[in-house]
Image 1 (cartoon, rainbow, N blue to C red):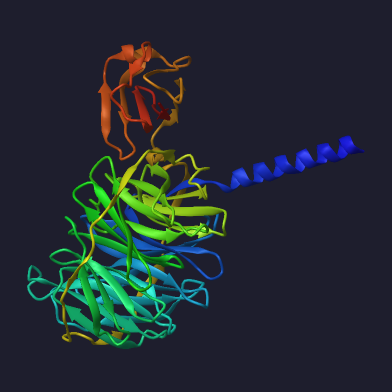
Image 2: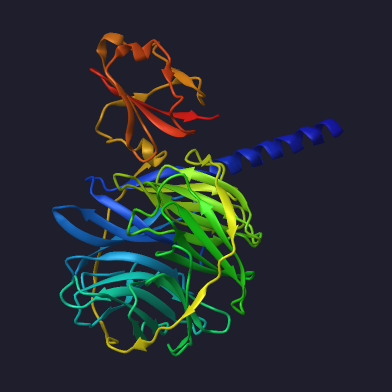
Length: 501
């Protein structure tokens, strides 16, 4: 009896482990006509589904159209929609959930702020737009408020569009009715959160990166500049442990500032990255909370992406690299993350990992160094002015938008009409060199072999067919995941090669 019980327990554990392993996935979403799509922001709805907002583009033939896609925790698409009129150009830039399982989406046309509420089925509940006579406008972020409404930030220019930039902060009730708008002589406003005392905290770019605290009527409580060498702020995040702000230091580092709810600085952490970051103007680093009171930073780095786990005391727990520009991530209960991002040719990548960033074929471990800084924020002055505050209803036309799914990482994205196969390598993972397995390959058909990094750039290419019989040296390549592509007269073969040292 004891033996049977033990065998049954082992069977249950194995089934549980297998079921858990099957929860992880990686897939690529793209339009069947190869039009480009991009995810900008991701949110979790109150019924535990997920919605990302972004845009669809057929450049240079057609302008952008706002894109909204709803899916479940396994990445199965429930519906996908695009906004096709009344504007010739639209981009959705941020999204928040509503209590009725819907979402409110922030976006812009060439010269209008756009706010759209959609219900669980993807139907329009209401839509608002600004009625400002300006040159151009760029929406950045939206946050819920304690009064069941929401607040938004962004920047605009007067006519003509190359005039100086100004920022705006606007608040609304839960039905999208405008409450107030304040304007500031600052270059950009990137993120906004509401604090437990009901005041609003804004970060963005001025002469330096800044933090600005506003009363809930829009009046300025205080304004501080972030030093040193910080000209770009990215995002804000509030946890039970305090307030986090994320900004740029120099050309290749992130700065993470933590303060308590009395605005006393706890620490500033400099996070050093291997190469330049922040090249994509539509995406920027973000933060989410973790169940252990830490945070995860989402970063875009040279058209790839990073997840960086930070404890509440500023220690880096782990860091991962992904083969796409990570746009955003959300939690699945307290056991997993779902991640959305964009490939170099603009398909959208979805992947699911455990709480340590493992389980997906699309993540690899990386080492990141950090150091604490002794700098403090510098008090400064800013005043608001009231120039634009009118919002009106509009009637958007939303249509269904067909997306094609492909299992795998975004660097495996290949035209489905193109002949393809699977390459095998020995060893894999490799260290200093590897060989291509050629048992069933006709060497006389050889045309070219190339290796691409996770951003899609060709870093090795040869027309010498000796590469099929001799080892290929990898000593100059960093550890990571690469795509090897072999072109012959009969087919185009590809495979993933991992380098680990």
